[in-house]
Image 1 (cartoon, rainbow over the protein chains, first blue to last red):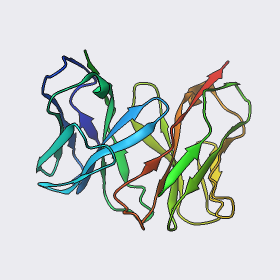
Image 2: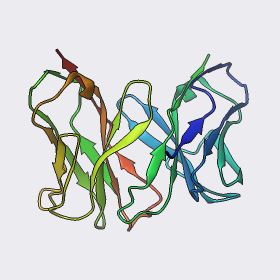
Image 3: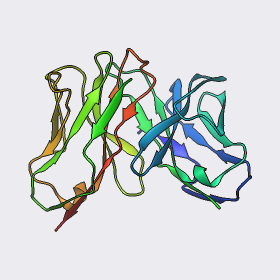
Image 4: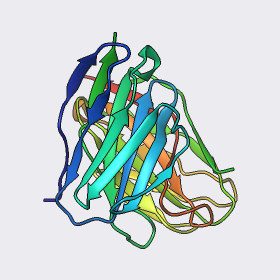
Length: 114
Length: 114
């Protein structure tokens, strides 16, 4: 069974800390994504990557950066965490399937910034 | 731009009741449409999809029909169970704006009581 694994289910960090959220997929997918999920706002795309060392900004990239040094790993970095970055973060990977349905999501990391 | 509007929740139903969750969309091209489900503490799972007008997606007793004339993709189930309690997201993937992104609705929380 295909898997996307996020390293932490829950994180609590202090304002101003540098935070790393890790995501690993075992499916050899080219495309990987980071979303944040907030009540009433649904999922919003932060960044995505379509290949190693390649990245593209999504809809809300401000305050975030990403790293894709290996195909299987896609890291989301909060350079200086702020309270408005308290959220649920979801990683996904995708292989091209006609109709665009080839997304697999991780279980999410709930980050609280205090 | 592309967008998805779905019925606000929360929705509370008794077991065996009929479920409808409304979803309408705006897209520049000919999108594929999806329903994802998020069970408590988990990531998103694809529930069903439709890739062209008049297609009907179905899975686990849920159905949704791609209606181009009304730009809708409403989710229905004839008889809900307690195990259907989850958050449901309508989404679209539009090849005209880049198949590397899904546009999500805000999510509808369904609670089914015995």
